[in-house]
Amino acid sequence: MIQRIQTIYLFVAALGSAGVFAFPFFSGIAANVPIFADGLYDTHDHVALLGIAIVAILDAVLTIFLYKNRKQQAIFALVTAVANLLIIAFMLGILSSQVAIGTAISTLQLGMGSISPLLGVVAAIMARRSILADETLVRSMDRLR
Image 1 (cartoon, rainbow, N blue to C red):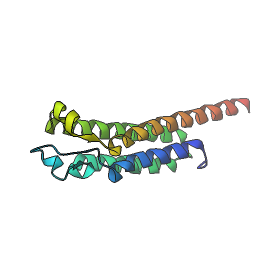
Image 2: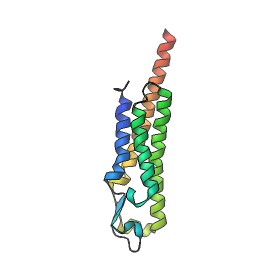
Image 3: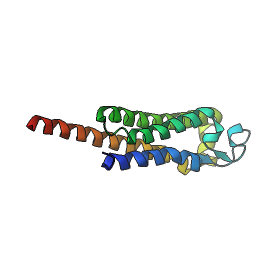
Image 4: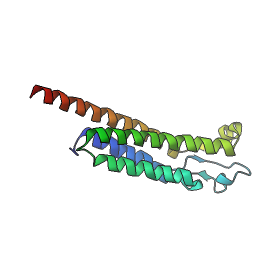
């Protein structure tokens, strides 16, 4: 059913994935680095980040409406978590290829956009655990009949 706790978790995962559009990953000035030309590093600086973020949001929202098929819902919740992990990996990979680690630590400030995918990962994993708990409960109730 749609009023289960995993719906809230999946909604929070979607919000965590959408947070990368509202907040920058890093802010600051890094000399001669094209992704920091405007002083911000966010999803609009790379097409892969933009695509993965959209997939993560759509997957989390779609997963909410798969409540009739719990096995499929659990798989889609795992895909949401993996997509958020990919956002983090691409973000750090692109940043490390553009800016030296010492420069990044000394000159750049961490933004809320780099933390919001972590919220999406945790919420998606919690949703998956709740979905699997529901599936176990339904199986045990079927055995009693």
